[in-house]
Length: 598
Image 1 (cartoon, helix red, strand yellow):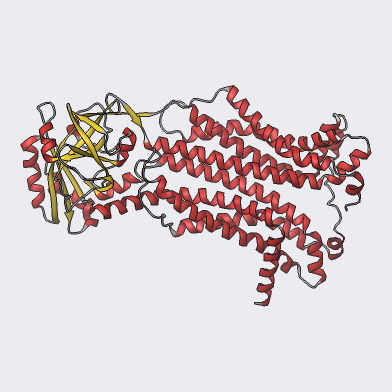
Image 2: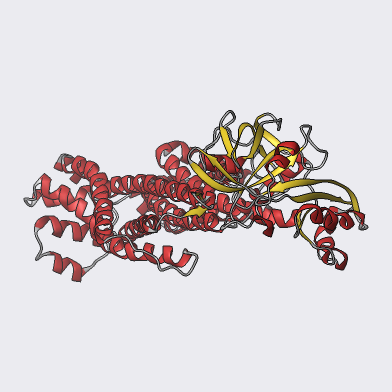
């Protein structure tokens, strides 16, 4: 127990001594784990959202709609209500499939007639306004968002005008654009939105060209048997189409493109977080060489030293992973909410999603893997450093690269300095290349995604936005912003560590005649040399990634060459700008202080 307490105290002191690097590491791990948790939780959250709506509205177990119309439809439904296993039913409700007009748009819809008092089974949950009344219409929430209608707006249905009195959610049918699921509509598109009128108003719309159909909602004695009930021979013998509540649950999690975008983004963020953490941890370990020597001089074993150095990073990773998990669970219900990324005037009141045990384990393993992958190597090397060597804390000797050193001698002074500095620390150069490759892959994938032709749903005379596509756009934008911010923080920290590490060799170069400007450009070149080929490889990698995830037989449209070159150039310019500040400060550092610092 005493050893554990000592390790904990040493880890806590180490975190306090390095607040800024710890904050950067926590930001990287939290961002990566939040994206991973969001991707893993999204499908479950969509199902949980449907379950919440179903509970709030007492949603039906089975929804039935006859194939026929008019009185024949009522006759077809009647034997269904007498089948064993049905506890109660509501309806039949009259239904028509009109074209409606709102805000200059004419679209296909499903209109359902209801009583002015909510029914026991499927009483839609109002998110705005009041329930139906004569002359009033209540619009399903996702459909209202797509149309841009609010309470008080007007809808024109079959030549009659209705006032929108409310916006509501239902568990009896899929949200827009999946309200139409039976063949009576006869329209040119299978996509439609749902709205409710009073039964009297709806029957007043019926004409030979717009005939009535009906729908009924059933409650079973055992809701879990809904699939078996729908597939039973007795139901198959009746001329009706049926849907079960499990089918609507499966439909609610149909967020493939959104899920793919988040999953790809999360792994890009994990790769970037690992590269940034490795650079940060290496810099921190290099600063603690003398501290390690003091530990050993006081009697600490190599195992205790390694445990103390690892503990602070693993503890920080666990806390950051928990924060990322919580953030992902908070965002998941918003993204799985009916209506997706369509602009809303009042979000559905849902709590955080409940992560599964697998999601919690995956996030914890990812957080620990980022920290351990970054810290194990430096901690092992620090623990096995001799006590005398650690107390002396000499400058880290560069690895010899005679071939590169010889080739650099023929280059201009700034490039020569840059190549030699990059060759001194190949691990840092590799991490810079990995970060640059990850960022350019994400940016290139986003450019390719936005190069595709805009997709809107055909609802007859007009088109409306597709909620999953809009939501995917928002996800791509969010991932790119997170990548850019995290990459910028990592690049700034790496550049600062590189400037500190190169202070002595650059001071030697200045004593041999190099100017501060040449030294500054040399340090910038040391960062850009590994980044240039990585950026060139990241551009086609991002295009290929987008093509791999593109659904459908259509050929992927690639961004223009100007856009690709501009993206690569902008990435390298930002990296150079982030390196310029610490490089310039290092170039202005007095030579005699730099030479006497080790």
